[in-house]
Image (cartoon, rainbow, N blue to C red; front, side, top):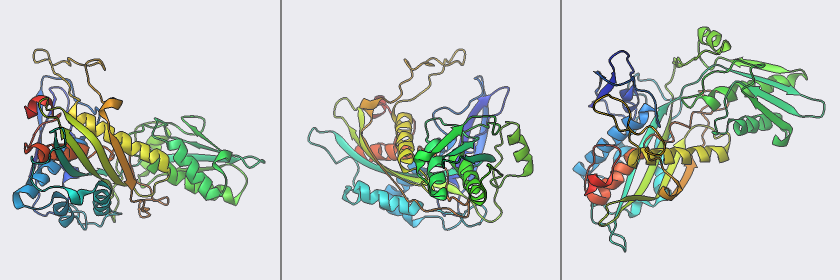
Length: 407
């Protein structure tokens, strides 16, 4: 049972569908998810430093870890033994699901087989407690209608204009890579334009739908460009109805699915975390993390690896440092600045090794790409919490996990 009590404001509703994702983690038929909204005297909540799937995964992955110890089973093997062969909610097949491969490959990279089974007994030379934890993450594949406009000049140069945003996630690199592969030209001959309303209205970029929305349109436009010399423009619905296409054409938000008739689609990740809990100070250090993602085709390996590492940093901050302090008198935030809100810095982050399954999901789209940005974080906090238990024997049921929790 996964029961959620989520606060909202007196005047508005904000429902985050935590159990929508945890119900898809495992092939367990005896699952029940319940969610309750609790009206409180605060402003309406919103997304901050995470999708809601991050908190959902921390809850269920902590519980699964606890079950593993209760039945005397390796936490990794328990997860593998309960993989879901099809969507437990609808009974539909997955478009693709390689989370078991993420877990196995991550375990090999991490050296999981060398993990002592008993919590609280593994010490380093300085007397710090060592713990290893594992958790998985999932995030639904969402898309938005997309437009790609390609032109080619006499000297062979190609300009690609898409209605996406470059926030540092590397969509320019992904668009350039797909265009170069499809047209058989060097990336040096490609110019990528984003955010130019002369070509298309600009939509909201969130929810890991940037590359998964833009790249199928780019690929379709390259096919048109190969057939004739004139400009090629493709508007891709990406499975969304015409009403969403019409909204997108005017720059409105087009978050409405899609709901596919024949399959259910998610991206996945597996995270392996090592913690060291210092003797005396009880400070938690994370010297290394291994993360493996199933995001379909990896269109741009360098920027994808950066996204996955960045998501891990995001998750470490949520697990060990970041917390909003609420004024109990007036409901306002007491630490709204970067001076008072402790985000992770370089000195907090150790080694992060990443890898990808890199299997195209061609049921989803012609490029085979799924989302990556959000799923990179989902599951990290669960792996940290499980590693803390393995190190100390203490099951901490709150985030962030701080020094007072381990005194």
